[in-house]
Length: 405
Ligand SMILES: *[C@@H]1O[C@H](CO)[C@@H](O)[C@H](O)[C@H]1NC(C)=O
Ligand SMILES: *[C@@H]1O[C@H](CO)[C@@H](O)[C@H](O)[C@H]1NC(C)=O
Ligand SMILES: *[C@@H]1O[C@H](CO)[C@@H](O)[C@H](O)[C@H]1NC(C)=O
Ligand SMILES: *[C@@H]1O[C@H](CO)[C@@H](O)[C@H](O)[C@H]1NC(C)=O
Image (tube, rainbow, N blue to C red):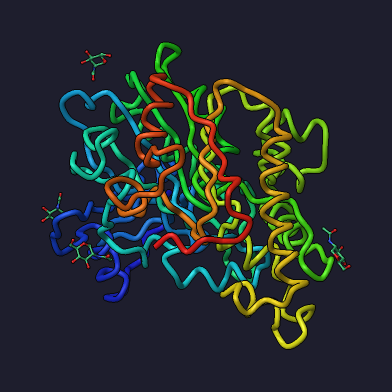
């Protein structure tokens, strides 16, 4: 019944490469794990007999998804921290094809070892709250913040759009490795992964035991629905195209899509008020990515790339550009305030010109860590997670981006 095809030498070498991943051991590095259950049942890929195979949850190039898993121990043995990697989005066939040849589009190209730092660090002195938990860094390859779900493979490019299936497949595998018995769980992520940790927060909650303490923490994932400096719709147009291309609508929170356009449900501000699971929002009001990709207009709308220069160094901004920059930070804070009060929500909103602060060991914990109300990020999030104390702090003191190095 199965077709027998003789593999070429190249295919054999490739398969051996897939089976035996040779990596150099490093101190804080954690080995990659390729997701097994992404493989459809009955499909096998053996060196001397090449049988047709198909993965159901795959990266754009058809390769299986991957994650890095550092096992918990001691008090943390039953606690699980799942961190979703970021890396923007791909909104067109062309931009997704471009990612197929990068780690952000193919597990074949991903580094086989990843350094765990900040919230992921396994060393107590650098990460007192979560160091002994099971910590998982989920690789991001789909380009849709884990929301895509298209059965057909693009015939011209062989592209797959299946981010939501990747999320499911990874979660199923982790549940099978003991997460189904978790007493504590935290879904986190940064940038496009921080957005995914919001969009999938209630889904994550549902996968966990009812008795578990389950929360979510988004780092640099609160992308503001704002116009760019030229009055254009740069960010909304990008999200519109992402949601169309990956057919994300079915995987955005129904509590939002029942009320508004799917594109808008890619913006946390329209989703967060309906989320049931406790959520911590860690973000700068002057997030580097947002200043450079939401407020900064497309190059065609930015004469002489003048705003782009301003976005990289605000000392180069004209008075009018400075006002726009201040306006963005203010709009960010007002938008958060408008989310309404919710005692279970955590807020750590500073003014650093930064992106992904929780995985940066220096910013996360220690003497030079980013602090609000005298609390380092690690302490604020840890106290909030364990219900030792709430944390809702916004930096109102600065009206321009701070360097915070
Ligand atoms: C990572 O994988 C390599 C090769 O399989 C192995 O030698 C090494 O011990 C692994 N490292 C860890 C920390 O598990
Ligand atoms: C990972 O950490 C090791 C040792 O701490 C360091 O030598 C290496 O350069 C790091 N790798 C990356 C990709 O940052
Ligand atoms: C399940 O969790 C309980 C505590 O919550 C623990 O005692 C037990 O060892 C766990 N079981 C497995 C199979 O990990
Ligand atoms: C954004 O603006 C462009 C040009 O005005 C328009 O063609 C496009 O449809 C807009 N996109 C969205 C999502 O509104």
